[in-house]
View 1 (cartoon, rainbow, N blue to C red):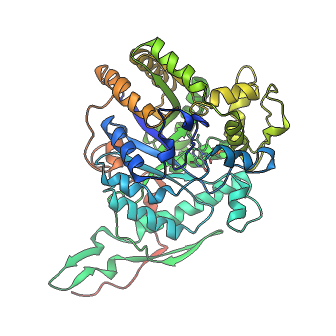
View 2: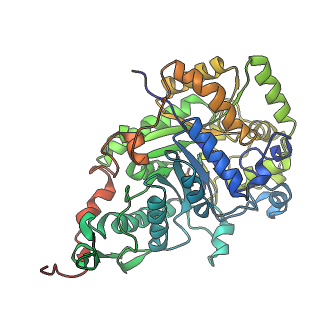
View 3: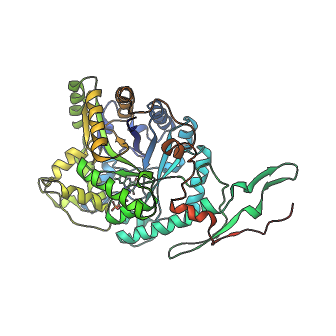
Length: 466
Ligand SMILES: Cc1cc2nc3c(=O)[nH]c(=O)nc-3n(C[C@H](O)[C@H](O)[C@H](O)COP(=O)(O)O)c2cc1C
């Protein structure tokens, strides 16, 4: 049987995600972003289209690199205002049964203990459908907002993230045994202290001496997303990630990243096939090619170049107000940046001008934009999977929720007809839906597994005789 293509809907809790200016399009509902009705509608549309998950981007920074101020971002709504997605997803869980719910949360601004508690809570409330997109943050503003002078250097951020993950794994995997929850009304016992352990984590950045506050959820550790693509980012993904989100423009660097990260996973004792890869892309589909082309041209008229420049400067750490739009995109390495994005702009055969990047990125961000009829789109999606070894797509949009809806109504049936898209959801947790029955929790090859019986986890009390 052909490999089934997986799909995530890519979103942000803000009026602008990756298509600045498109909120002005008459078909767009972005301005409803701060209502639960909008998000529960999105969740239902994605589930009707049998998407695997939604992936909500986040971060506590604001894009203030362009011209050295946040004015352009604030003017154009470029990912500001930005609300907290952790507070959103239980409403989406409540109106769906299968959709995975991926929330981005940085490791750089709070202790592991409080974050671990919130993810365990969400995993309970969603019946095991929560995913965590692990990010290290890339903005100086975010660091200053929480009392630091500037962001840590790029690679040490990942060292901190490794330590953060060891700490949350100890809480999720090691603190409570499955048998710890007793609930015996006759004896009046809820939990057995001899089955609950205090986690002692004393590292370079974090210190914990505490019991995890939440009893084991169905997945224990949430399903782990990651999207770093630098050299150090690939190592981090190879060690921890269950799904990696790529943001390349073309197939060759995507294929190279997939092959390299899968190979590196083996160096960490994992199977490279235990990581799913999703390429960022936007689909503009119509009943016919001409209809899709007309839609694309119409959407392009709404791109806001100023918003695009605010986003690009923020991501790359390069103040693009200092350049002419016809200059080639500068390749200056910054610590406060998504370094892999700068690499990908500089790697293409011909250097992109800033204007070309604005035009391309203005609809759905850095990934390719596929425009066509359902059969043309399906052909291209299959070609991407065949030529890059990815598992699926992280679907961005020009207008929301219309972009998801068009995909669900026009492209999904075509993919199903070809036998390359699921016709129903599998039972169980998100991890079981992605990796198969019996895989509710991380496999023993994953680094989290060693915390299941780690020496640093001591019983809260010696067992008592009943
Ligand atoms: C598809 C995609 C989505 C991302 N989403 C976020 C996000 O929501 N928040 C964030 O802080 N970084 C996000 N990033 C950035 C990465 O997670 C990562 O922090 C960044 O690429 C820097 O790491 P690198 O230099 O290893 O690539 C995203 C990257 C990609 C490709």
